[in-house]
Length: 338
Figure 1 (cartoon, rainbow, N blue to C red):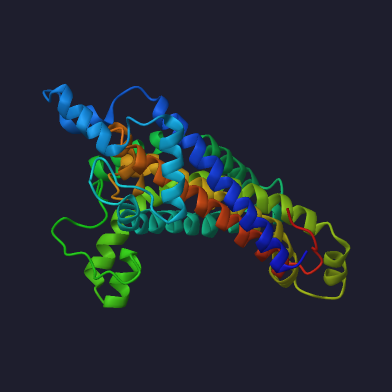
Figure 2 (figure 1 turned 180 degrees about the vertical axis):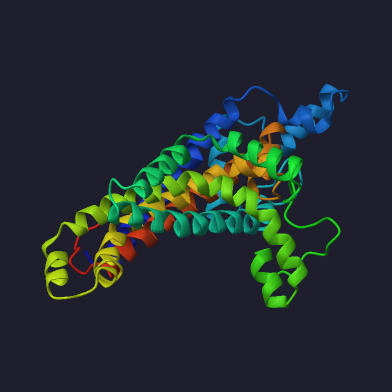
C-alpha cells in the first residue's frame, strides 16, 4: 500500500471518527441533568430570563435540529461559543492546547528515554538482576494510578522536601517567555532566558514524570519482547560469528529492527497521554486543556466539552496516520498497513 493510499484511507477514517465522536458527545452532553441557561442566568433569575437565554443558545429547539446546527457549524470550522467563558471554543483551545502538548511531549520523551534503555538492558541481561528490576518497574508503572502517584510526588517533593513547585507552569513572580512555539521550555531557550527555562523545567518535572511513568513500563516491556525476538534471529548469530562486537550487534543491528514494531506502541502512548493529561493537569493545577475541560464539565459548558473531545480525537487519528507512514518508511518490506 502506497503512502497516498494510506493517507486517503486514514482521512476517510478521520471523517467517520469526527462524525461518530460529535454524535456521541452531543447526545451524552444533552443527557446530563442540568440546565446551562439556568447556570448562566443564576439561581435568582426569573423564568422569563432563563427562557430568553435558552432561546438565544438554541436550547429550545428539538434535539435533532440542535445537532444539525452543530454539524453545520463544524463544517465551517466553528466549534461553537463557550457558555462559561463567552469566547469561541476554538480560541480557548488554541490558548490552552500548547500547555497540554508541551506536557504530553515531555512525558513521552521521558518515557522513551527511560523505557527503551530499560527494555534493551532487560533483554540483553535476561533473568539477571537488572531484568528483574526492569520488570518490577514495568509492572509498578502500569499498576500505579496517576492520581495516586501525583499526590505522593506532591506530598514528598513539594510538601516535605520542597524541591519542586506544587503546581502551575512557571513561577508566579516570573514573566512567561514570549510566545514563539507555545512551549515555555523551548521559548525560554530561544529567548535566552535561563531563569524562565529553569523555572519551567522545575514546574513540568513532576507532572511529566507522573504522566510518563505509566508508559515507561509499557515501552520497556515492548522493547524487551522485540529485542528478545531479534537476538534469536540468524543474522545476529551470523554477525557475532563474523567478529562484530556485542555492542555493535545490539545497538547497530538488533535495536533498529526492534524499534520498528515499537512505533505503534509510541503512537498509542501519545494518544493515551493526551487523554490522561486531563487528570494530571487537575492534580498539578497545570493550565492546559485538562483544567479547561474539567471546569467546562462542572459548568455544563457543552460546546467546550464537545470541542475538546473532537480536537483530541482528531489529534489521535493524525498520530495514528503518522505511525502508519513511519512504519512504511522504516521497513520497506511492509506493503500493507491497517
